[in-house]
Amino acid sequence: MTNELALSVVIPNHNYADYVGTAVRSALDIRWPNVEVIVVDDGSTDNSLEVIKAYADKITVISQANAGQMPSCVNGFRRCTGDVVIFLDSDDALHPDIMTEIAAAWSDAASKFQFQMRVVDARGNPTGSILPQYYSHPTPQDIRSWVTTTGVYPTPPGSGSAYPRSVVERIFNFESDFIDRAPDSYLIAAAPVYGDVITIPKPLVDYRVHGLNHGAHLELDDSRFAREVDLTRRRHKFFTEVASSAGMPVDAGALNRNLLFLCLRAASYSLRPDIHPIADDSAMQIASATFKALAFSQGFSQAQRTSLLLWMILALFGPRGLRRAVVGWRYVPTARPQWMKRALSLLRVVKKAPAAA
Image (cartoon, rainbow, N blue to C red; front, side, top):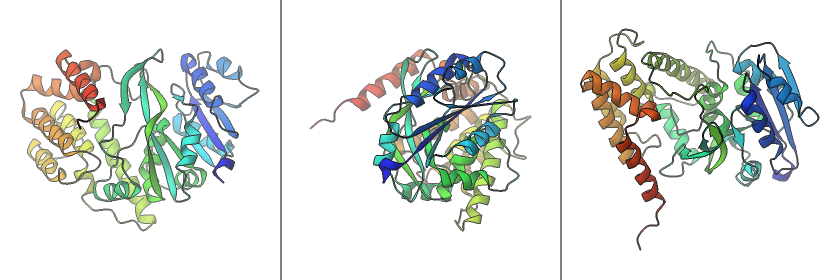
């Protein structure tokens, strides 16, 4: 039955003429008998449409006035027909065996298949990084436990997931006042409610970091963290609404056990307390919440949780200059000093080395 699955790759694009051709070719090169590729050009003002139309005999091309990434994905989804849907960012690229791996892990109970992503630079050269990193292979049961107690689970960004069509339909049709530009915010948040999140622990997508993409931060923007705290709170509210509608209980204090949220909260409060979106917040309240959150795994090893605690203490209570540097080390890879880069490189080598007998 899995050999009969049809895959739809929906590629939203806006002014990525330099990369969209690679994204389209990667989708066309998937080694699978039934692949449909839909490219939605969202009012590009560069020569993106010219690049896309070079493949017009092999793909479906939708050209629309600029509306944003989320409407582009919805528009492309409405035109697709596959059993499985991948929303591929137009600066990323799929690996040829991606659908073979999904089929091998197939379960009718699945709501999402997620895989690791190989980080590449603007020219497509691997940087040596893989995301996300798993210290153990998370099971669907692990993920369900983590989201109900902390509201978070280890997940790649948008291009690193594939969804059964029926799940996308339910999420896109869910009525909520939550609004965000990225489909990730809806799909990643709600997927655990509708079934099993199945993790395939191998890189099956190239994630391109080039400085223009939304997730790439090459310089530290102090005001960014207030926005991300606000977005995370609104996204969690959306998740709890979806969970409630499906009868999934979520702990009332889940968000304040979310270590990733607490890191954003610490960065926001430490760097720009004047625009921090949580009224009457304090360094002691954030630190106290972090100590309590350490009791919940949420996909981190004990060593990772200890490292986050040390980072939190420095980010909240260090001198002003150190606080800013520490935040930069976590959120802007180019801000890491050479000694830290060498240490991280050494850790990757040690991690890959065979264990002693």
